[in-house]
Amino acid sequence: MKNLCTALLAAAIALVLQGCLGGSGNATFSDGYYRFVHISPGSDNLAIASNGTQIVPSLSYHSATPYLEFGWGTPQIKVTSATSGVTYVNATIPVGSDGHYTYFLFGGGASVTNYSLRDDVVDAPSGSFLLREIHLATGIGAVDFYLLAAGATVDAGTPITTANAYGIGTVFTPYTAGTYHLAVTPTGTKTVIYDSGNQVFTNNEKVSFVIFATGSGQLVNAALLPNDSTGTTNFVDNPASRMKVVSATTDVPVVDVLVDGTVTLADVPYGGVADYAQVAAGTRNLAIQPSSTPGAYVYNQNQTLSAGYDQSFASFSIQGTGSAGLIALQDNNLPPPSGRAKLRIVNAGSDATAYDAYANTTKLVSNLVQGSASAYQVLAPATYALAFNPTGTSTAATLLNASLVAGHVYTVYTFGRSGAVASVLTTDY
Image (cartoon, rainbow, N blue to C red; front, side, top):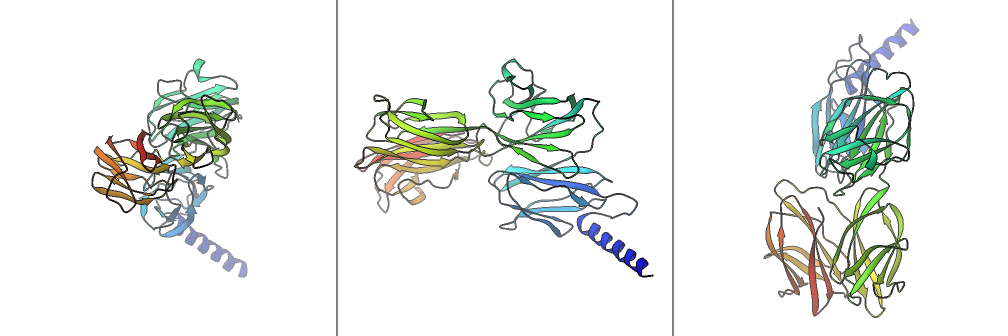
């Protein structure tokens, strides 16, 4: 009798748990499994609930859960900001008997959306593995996917998928097991915006390859998701990064920028902008030298270039030293809201003057101190008079007419010293 009561209690608990995570909990069907992957850049940590019961309290960007068990049925999934409680997703999901699924959360910032796929698939032919490609990289146009033998390049290769649009995944396709690297290019080009490095794919392995945004205007990161028993997600970050430089070193008319001792950006004039260059990610030595006197560095320090991201650097003169400082900025080149432009404002001056920044007569930023940047401002497309007034004054130290176009991201820099102040606008995306 005791064993019977214990069995009945266990069955009752199982039904309660199924009611929390799943739908009907029908005993004639096996449970299903979902893993959740947060790849929405600039978004809060996400909380996930099923049928009103929290199952994931806080999932950060660039992370994933293992497979979580759900009762068979159609549970209600609610995804909210773990910080503010704002709801991003509120929808039912199908849970098939013994089905395995991946639920991607992507988009960027406050625009989080979802895309789910079933992972179950029949076995590949002997000696083969199965691969599907998924494009969830916000702000990146259609792409081509390459599966390349070790040492092969896209220049001589043929894509396995062409013109893969944003928000779309392919079906699983068999390929001979072996060692490959996965590369991604904008459709119709040979410009590599991602390369996985060599990966080993074994007999009958089933793998989803998803690319996602970081905030770069060109590069992406990626993950490999095998359909294994636990729901592993392997994030394989981009080996590349991008950097641009604004030369605002008042005492040096033309500079070169070196990365690990090699001139990467040459002959950048004072007030000039060297557009994004793709370099290896990681801790890199950045040096600035007068173009006329190689080796006479005015700046020589290490900087971290994040994998798959865009960074901007603005140099400035340190008064009385003959050396330069460097403002390091991580760029957010995700597209602005529809019909709008984004503008960031930077004080790269070579003295201690702080500024109030205006667009026409509207003050955008107050008391922007030397070496700092504002948050991105979302503006209607128009031509603006961008003015920098020393804080608390009504007279512009520098004024720039700037045409901001919908769909683009900009940064305006003020630079120089009091009495000789200028500004420059860069288009970052």
